[in-house]
Length: 234
Image 1 (cartoon, rainbow, N blue to C red):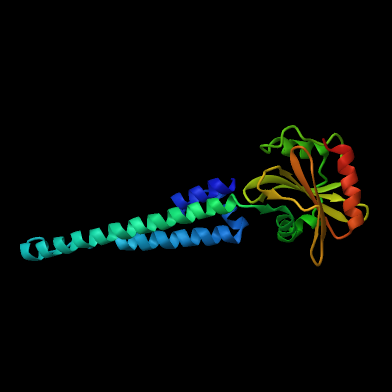
Image 2: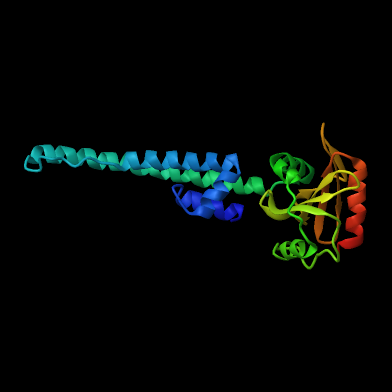
């Protein structure tokens, strides 16, 4: 389930019990926060719309008074519902505008490596056919593929770069492991040729249809994997 579909379902029904929806919600803390906020808003609206029906319908005077109060309350509630809907709409638009802003690929790449640290400790023994099948399933990647096995591939999975479906691989470097991201080219993305933090180093480069980012602890491993990609990726 992509990011847009998840948020659409969350706004429509935050109590959705669909397994795919729940799995997507558990992937990111911001997803869980959004769903909890929507559930809270839903509960407040349900409480606001609950109107007690007078029990003594025979007493016309009380009934008239209750009806007057009821109409007044409904007008107030309608205003609150309209305000809540407007707020939800503004939040949704703000989120959409945020997604249209510049995407720092280096920042996202480092965040993915830390968030999915388990990927560096898994050996799925992935072959080139599996990798190419995943590449073929990603929109806007054209016909990119590996012409041969790009060395040892330990791990492969899809990942999300600010709403853009991408491919996350862990491959063998000259000595250590290197995380490789293949991201469809979009104009809003910003690519640094080199980047680093206190633990990892990274390099980025671009082909006609994709951005490629490599993250590892040793620069020699990154250069080794880049050479492998240049020889096997088209």
